[in-house]
Length: 115
Length: 111
Image (tube, rainbow over the protein chains, first blue to last red):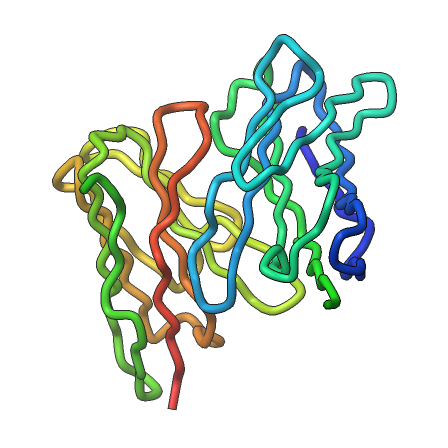
């Protein structure tokens, strides 16, 4: 079985400050991990993914995420937040060895960046 | 441009009426998916398809039906059996096991 948790419904940060959006996962094998962003009334946009290799993954719009196997986490980070980063963020996981190619999505975290 | 399109953007349905949501992709992806999004509940998988003429039920398939007659098309029908169909519907496609590309969504409202 595979599952993903986003423990925060909402994250508030001031513009220019670093931001972190948390994600933890559970799989029986090895994970593929993904982050997506959704702006109001739009589809999801792919930000970045971890498949294998370097634990620090860099993605679109200055975002990065760190894969931590011991803590089963894949937190999304950005060094300096912009007001335009305000959106809904989804983490997703797929168990590579679990036989399913369908990712499981978290419930989403609303990021609000204040001017 | 390569991408995935959904139509219509907004759809209104009367009680007891079936409606069909369109999803087309020109990315040559084998896999296609339909998700339902409700506030605070994230994305829930309705149906998915790995190959033409084959599809599988997701977590909330009751009251929905799909077809996959062509690789690029994966329409979703919301039937009158779906008791609470008002939601935002998202279609996606991917190479098997890779990150998904999402369409812009269709917002369905029951009158």
